[in-house]
Length: 64
Image (cartoon, rainbow, N blue to C red; front, side, top):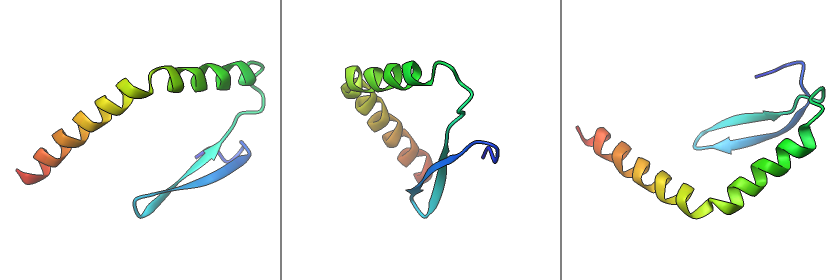
């Protein structure tokens, strides 16, 4: 958490929550947000595949 940054939202995550804050002093924030959004949209399929593989690995670890 960054108490000096404005809190945008609090996102629920499996029984917990994550604060989403932003640094307003970042001169490139608009560009950074756009780049991040572009990457997510461009690579959404491969990100999904990798998260599914990670999910499977974590399930296996829990069984052990």
